[in-house]
Image 1 (spheres, each protein chain N blue to C red):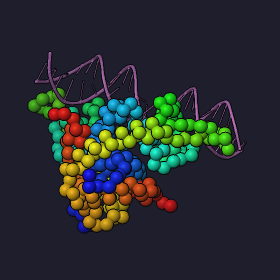
Image 2: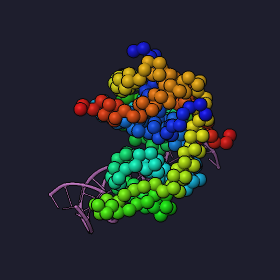
Image 3: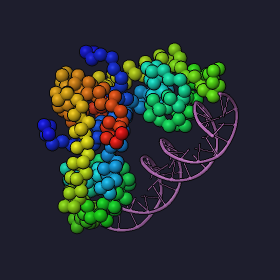
Image 4: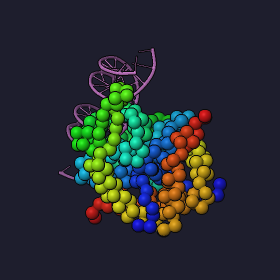
Length: 149
Length: 149
DNA sequence: TATTGTTATACTCTATAACTATA
DNA sequence: TATAGTTATAGAGTATAACAATA
């Protein structure tokens, strides 16, 4: 290998992610939503999904785990949730204007902090880092786990 | 800002780390140790610590959380754990030769898989990515959370 | 009978607080 | 009284399975 000896990638990413999450929590609390709720808003804003099951899969959660989150978001009128007339088993989900605003406000605050952290890197490394993270985070899980397929 | 609009860093790192951990689990199971045990072995190998409390802090765990792990590692003779004659409250911890071998075998397997994943990146991006991850993972948590201090 | 969403149950993890033995 | 290690308890989070409505 051309890279020098190194610690495990996962072992380095773990504390970094934990710190980034610790930075997010007060922001989320200030805006009155949970991490799961924020995750749901982002997913509904960026890539509309039809069913709750599809949404759960999109954010890597169990379908039973997001129900209370959806209840809260609906109560707060940050999402709409209507029975599909074409298939009355399905609840059609959509982010509302208020949800879009809330999501944007939270994201702006979170990204502002992340910019501050990323600013500690040299500009070229920062760009390459973000390129790499985007590329790696798009890989299907099986490609990372090396699952036979 | 000079970087184009982007998703949250944490939101991208989260599924990536989950997949990396999913890739580690079968390796750890094949070698008969848990994630916490591996974490302990790495810590004892790379930066010897004196007390259990210091070890716990080094790996970001609670001191009560690693005790069963230490019990298992000691039973498997992968670590030694002796009462300090100078302060009999303290248990002196050290990795054994067997522990070092086990740790090395696990790390080789994990890093081999990570190399395969990293190989999907252009060489220059890969190097910059690893530099950036090393730098960011070394930042003190307060610098990432922006805690007043 | 298969599927969507929901609820209920059990299980795992984690955090907190007590306890012991030393100092 | 303070500290290192341990154990016990309780709480949060998660997964599994059962359930109701609809297809």
